[in-house]
Amino acid sequence: MSDRHPNLRVLPPPLYFILCLALAWGVHRWRPVALGIEYRIELWIAVVLMAIAATIGGLALGEMKRLKTPAEPWKRPVRLATGGPFRFSRNPIYISFFFILAAIGMLADSAWIVGSVVVLWIVLDRFVVRREEAFLIHVFGDEYKDYTARVRRWL
Image (tube, rainbow, N blue to C red; front, side, top):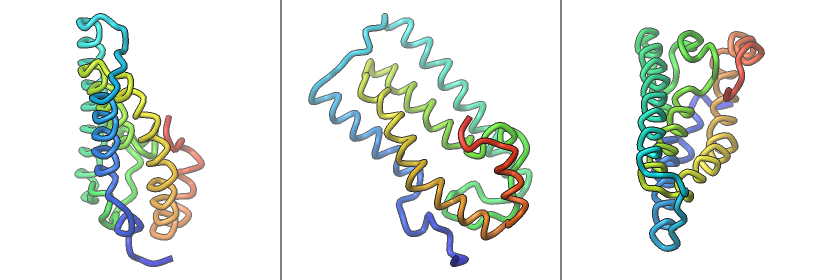
């Protein structure tokens, strides 16, 4: 395997988030499908989802900063993050993307945007995470294999 990060050959993961949101928003504008929930409840759900996203994402970024390893998914990692939210999931930042997308869907009262969470998960799982995992095995070897044996890919 090359020492070149696999995300340099595909779109950076945040762009998949933006593309899913843009596509779902476009479909919502063309053929709106409401969630059928009272707006005040949607608003509260969105606030909770955003708080969860901010907590998970913030703790994950803080752990990476503490380790002095880049958070940008297209840069070569220096150290393997296994603390903080990385104790529960190997991909907490991507999980925070799911919560943000669901929160935006709630605020927009759009079943399309909420449903795009599943699309984003499939795309990240198939086209990003599997490549990243192969690269991390290349970089960290048995340390990463041991980590994958202890911690789930998602939740």
